[in-house]
Length: 228
Ligand SMILES: C[S@@+](CC[C@H](N)C(=O)[O-])C[C@H]1O[C@@H](n2cnc3c(N)ncnc32)[C@H](O)[C@@H]1O
Image (tube, rainbow, N blue to C red; front, top):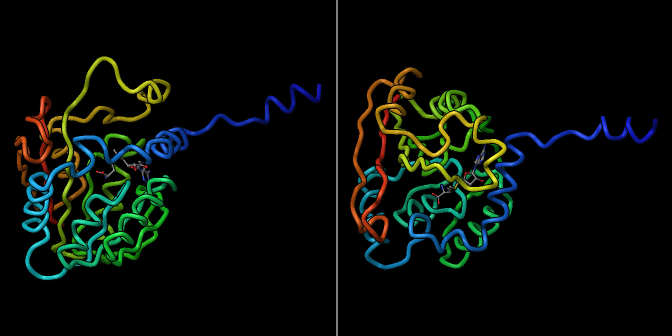
């Protein structure tokens, strides 16, 4: 009797908890991926160029949602912007902090759920993410939050793609049906979601160049820009 009561009281990990565990286990080697790290000076220069254009010439306060090992936070801070990175995987955040310390960049990295941000309304000029919206159980909720923390006229940049394939990562097998954008989506589909959230204007920029990804991407890759 006691045993079955104990069994009943053991909770299944939530979808988000399984996502968090997956990324927590990938921090050590994450930056080795062509679509994750900066593997050459040419690749670094290509991303610096994009981020410089997206953030603009004046220093901005930028929020890197699902920052992982700090990809955009580091690039933004390196260009003189004030960057805050949030993620819920502690080992990804630890790696981001190490990388920032190595290059003496002052970046605030915080543990937070990007669908429930711990920041006041209108506190950022720029909210940016790469490869994050596809792994959220509630993308519309995340978009509400990202719009909420942007100041009027502020800019959202989503670097996403459409890399759906029959065999996904095995960690995601039990939860992929709970992630509405699992595997990414074409730009038009994500753009429609963003527009439904009331962003004033949107623009899609294709990112189909070998320099950004080391090799010419096999799958559609783009930056979706939106202004509140
Ligand atoms: C594919 S990685 C991308 C990391 C980084 N943006 C980059 O481009 O290198 C996805 C990241 O999103 C984070 N993430 C996923 N869901 C999250 C959530 N609900 N709240 C916070 N972080 C989340 C994961 O922990 C992981 O670090």
